[in-house]
Length: 174
Image (cartoon, rainbow, N blue to C red):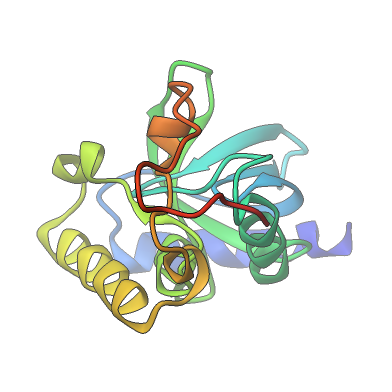
């Protein structure tokens, strides 16, 4: 993990940019799904990160694997910068994830491989709320990714056991 040696270069960047929340660099070593990563910090601490602001299709759900593969292509083996220190009910750190200056959550939404998670939009800055909502609207209007389906099932519904896309909708597959 020679990449870890370069992590200390991110710390001055975080401080210089004056991030209001803890900014932690780390290397992505695993991608669980389209919104969850495992990161190793410079000190060797391994932890899971849930990307803030998005909700990606679950494993076994239409576009779940494509979302995971896309997230892996954007992050795996890269040094990421995490912005935020909230913990979810599973003990995962909830944070915005950046590779260089690229907002990875926003990239997932733009690719049509995640929803803007409006349930938690009050935790986003106004700028992020607008950017994520606009990215989702663009992906939807272009019919890309999960928006290529007539009636995609949102992951929060899927987790509640809703598997039927509804009347007039086609079955989902990945």
